[in-house]
Image (tube, rainbow over all chains, first blue to last red; front, side, top):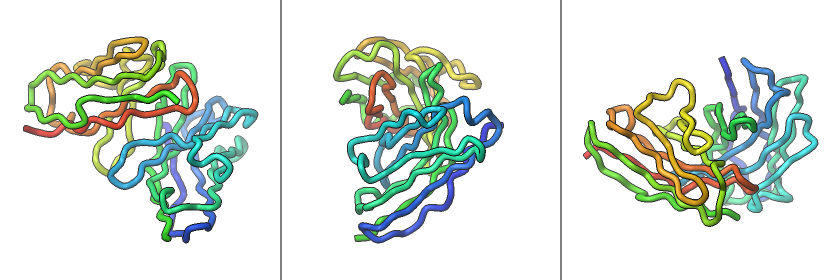
Length: 119
Length: 107
């Protein structure tokens, strides 16, 4: 079955960096766009970034542009999110998800990982 | 950016009730709309995509309709496991955006 497992998040100081990873299994990873979504405590969902199958195309929310970098390694079935210059407002549960661009939805999600940025 | 406005933001209903949630887009998005259900402490799960297509495995009491700027999610007969928060999402253009959510609670 499709499985997405995010790495552990953690506590980081404002201005610091953190790299999240997402291990995919149960499907042909290289066939799918992948995406990151976050959810601040008690708040709604915010799309963060997505990446095409061959990494040729990436897109970011304005709130993270220039600070976060999405990448993938199809040989390792892994997705990454490098987060730099972290701010308190980046505190959230971060989810990786499979982005089905044929049916236009996020059809599989990881369990989420909490990133806390202390000021 | 395309804004999605969900209404209501909170809904109190009883088991067996018919429930309708509305999602309005700030500009036309054709049928590039999905609906997700999220239970506390869990990741969201897709219910509906392309505005009206039921995701495999989702009960038929869930249905979606609409196109352009106005969309609805309907639960024909609310079940105990349906008490959750529901989000709409537009996938017409970047940045991809979500509605603010509708929390469905037990009356």
